[in-house]
Amino acid sequence: MWSSNVVIITILVIIECIEVGLNTLNKAATTRGMSNFVFIFYANALALFFLVPSTFIYHRMRPCRKLNFSIFSRMILIAFLSCSVQILWYFGIGYSNPILASAMTDVIPAFTFLIAVIAGMEKLGLKLKSSLAKFIGTIILIIGALLMTFYIGPPIFSNQSITPLNNFHQLQISTKSNWILGGFLLATANLLLAILYIVQAWTINDYPEEFVVTTVTCGLVTIISGVVGLIAEQNLSSWRLKPDLELITVCYAAILMIVLRSLVFIWALKKKGPVFVVMIKPLGMIVAVIMGVIFLGDVLHVGNIIGGMIIALGFYSVMWGKSKEEMCVEDITKDSTRVSLLHRQSDNNA
Image (cartoon, rainbow, N blue to C red; front, top):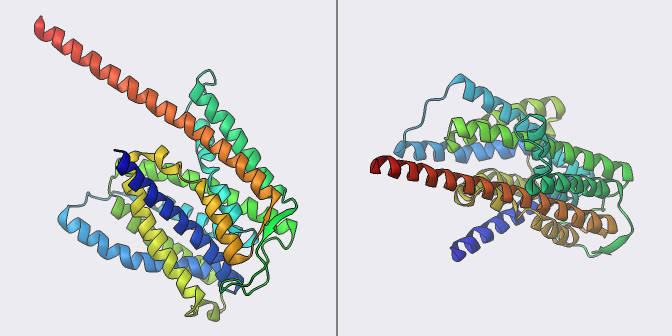
């Protein structure tokens, strides 16, 4: 059991590093002139190129369930949410940096909790330790996110050396207004991402065909991002991918993020559940700091450190509350199973 946990944790940490790596590459590529609209379209189109044959091969061995209008409508909603998240996310990184982006992903559990409470999917019972921990953790997360967005603080450390990815002027904190706008875009992206997770869980619960859902939604995102891109980027030269950092970033995003990351997350969720999977997320901040300083020449500020620590504290508070709830549900299920077995035994004896 222990060795299997180590394997899963190691794989999830690698995926987290891959995600931060994409944020760093995207920041570098867009600073050199790559359009985010073009990047999102090409990344999803290339991912679809790999997903379609994989889905056909998988379902040749295992018949696929029939797709109805209700499920397809949800897939359209997932596609619109996914496309919106990607646009807001990469533009947010453009106005800020990958460190803030990685920190903001830890706010997703708080958004999910708030949405569930507002939608009546979850009750806010503050007398229970689990609910109280989630409520306090949500408040702490929001405070940490606001602090990282509105307070930069004096610089602590910076890498002044020029690296292969950093022969351009540092633009991430050119003005405070840009930084705040970046934080707002990233927060909005994570709010939509929390809604996206809920819709995905709702869809997979009624239609447990992960390959089909992933492939169809990726195809829809490709269409939507293509239409949006043609409207936003009418200059044809923007659609020509340069065979340098731009092409590397697109291939990286398509193969490692959209395809590999999705499959690994589905595998990890089935093995250990959502709480175990997202516990790795705060490590992304550490990786983002290291990669940002080394490859982008990011300046590490006091606000990054304080805000990141507060966000990590709130994140683990929410996760502790969620794990306690799951343990309570498991105990109740076990108790009900025991009671039903005792009833059956007594009926048989009678």
